[in-house]
Structure formats: structure tokens, C-alpha cells
Image 1 (cartoon, each protein chain N blue to C red):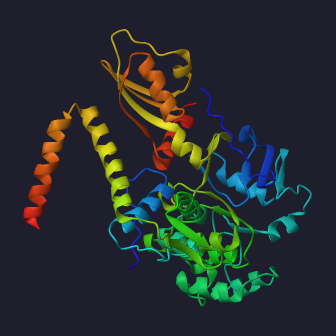
Image 2: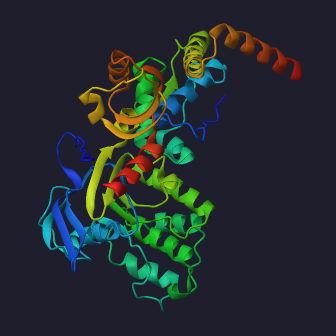
Image 3: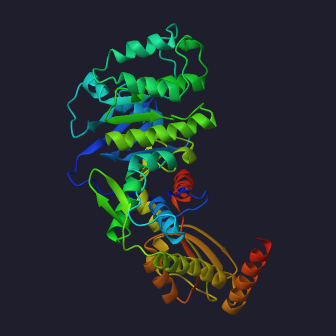
Length: 309
Length: 128
């Protein structure tokens, strides 16, 4: 079975992020396996995958914090930028907060970080500090994971980058701050038209924002698909079939998951609902229901299948 | 009168469709009247925690079918031609479609379904 799916790019063909053949080995473990990631400009691309699937390594390699053994990275069509030029246009939230500066007070850390970014927006930073209830007095190293996360989000957003790379942004945040983060990101995107690539285990937090999905399985990008396609073309079908029934080869090849009991079948399959309905009826099946899975279920389905490939 | 946009948890339809349905619901109820402004894309996206492009898509869809009109730089407004009864008709069709499909799936005869709907509505009216 194949889950290789690709989606159309925006019209001028320049993506916010495009990698080709990105490969990274850790000893004899292949952490990234020929990854061809395409994040269209203005997209909110959610990278899903099990622990250890390569999400963090992929984001780190885009920041050039992790070297790659093979492959290329282009940001906004530019593959030649220096690491510094690249990072200047990215707002990055790393997967942890162990990056030194533990002795700095939060206010000092933010001020020092601001110094690296000519476009740092002081009033926006102040607004975010208030919305995330950030206290600028404690030392960064003394913060809880969730408190540090909030500071990192301000560091990533307040220079108003055109690309956000967020590695598990809601990790450690309490439910109210998670909710506030959703509002902050929605506003940020509305104002800037920025592109966002984030990894998450918490699909529910990003369910309203995501418009593209990538599924990493053992370092391989097993699926890469737009939300519109996922929402309209991955269907759950419940049908009653005649004795001794068999589907056509075309239908069979579109099935991702199947269950059956007696003469009832429940299939998850790709295709336009109208066409599937017609083809099933033509085989003598009685279609009891045919519904698109919806984004959240479809994502879970791809994750589950990816894990079994 | 502005309406409270709500996405129903568990609704798996594309979000832009849920937003267009909310606008239609507001018109059907008589809460959204001609020339009434819809929230800005930024405000509604923030409010619902959804992608601004999705709100934009919903508004474009509503503009395309004549439900709203857009004034550049000013906002999106309910069109004058929007008739409450049209919207009630559209919502009725969608509800009927959902319920008939579910009835077929479960083997419920349509006559029995209609009788049950009338009975349920009568009880609810008595309750309130």
C-alpha cells in the first residue's frame, strides 16, 4: 500500500519551505529518509508522527542546528542563504528549553534576543507578555516547562518572521494558555500572511489552524496532503453486499482500511464520494452510509496506517 | 444584531462550511439583516481559533452565492436580497438530507420518521 500523496503548490511555485532528498543518519539509524517536504507560502503545515519519527530532527535541520548527510533545503526559493540569513527570517520554538541562558532573567533574555532582530516589535512583545502572563523577573532556568514555552513563543513571534517553525509549541502549556495560543497564532497569520510549520502530538490544539498535513514514519514522509483533499476525499463507507461479492480492482486499490462482518463491510477509502457511491452501487453493494472522515479522524487514520507500513 | 459564531465540537465537516452555515442560521433567525456587517476575518479567526484563510474562504463562498457583499477596506455585509425564507429553505433541505440518509442506513421507514418528528416537536412545544 502506498500513502505517497502530494499536493499542488501555490501558483508561482515558490514554497516557503522545500526540501529535496533530506537524509540524516545517526549511526545505523536513518532519522530522515529522503524527505521532500513542501510547505506552500502562507500554509499552516502540521507535521505529525510518533515519538522518534524524525519531526524534531527535520525542524532542526531546517534551522541548520542539525547537519544533514544528504539533500537540500530551500526557504522561499533560496537555497544559498547562510545559516544566519536563514534564521533571521524564522521564528523558532525548539523542542526543549535547554539552550543556556539559564542564569538570565526573563526580561534580560527577551531584551538580548530582541537585539538580534532589527524588526523586533516592542509593543507586540509587550502584548504577548501580557497575554501569556509572563513574569520578566525570574531566571529563565528556574521556569517550569510551560512558563519557558511561553517565553520561547514570544521570542519566536515578536520579530514578526515570515516563517514560524514550532516544535510541539503547546507542550507543557495549561489548557487556557493553549487556547490563547490558538488565538495568537490566528491573529499573527491574519496580519502577516506568514507560513507556519509545526510538529505536534496534540492535533486537537491545531485542528482549526492546520491546512496541510505531513505524516512522518521512521524518518520517511509517508504522506503529505492538503486539508481540503483529506477532508473531501478520505471516506468512511458502510455497505451491505451480496453473497460472494467482490469489488473491482479499481475499488480495491483505493481502500486504506477494511473491516467486515457477515455481509456488512466498513471501508476507509480514497476518492470522490459521488464516484465511489456510483462504483459501489454498480457492483451490487447497497451503500448504507458514505461520509468524509473529517480532518481529525483522517489524520489519525494516516498515522495508524503509516505505523503499520 | 450580531450573532455568536459557534463551531460544534464533533462536527467533522470542513470548517468553512460550518462558518457559512452559521451565517445562514443568523439570516434564517432574522438576527443578521441586510447591510449588517460580519466580523473581520482577523477577529473571527481569532475568536474561533481557526486559520484566517478558512474564514476568507467562507466569506468568498458567501459572496459567490450572493449571500454577502464585500466593500474593499470596509468589510463584508449581508446582501439586501437575502431572504429569511430562502435560508430556512436551504437549512431544511440539509437537515432533511441528513436525517433521511440516517433513516435509510438504520432501516427506519420514512413515514414512521415523519410521524416521530411531529410527535417530538409537539412534546418540545408542550415543554416550553
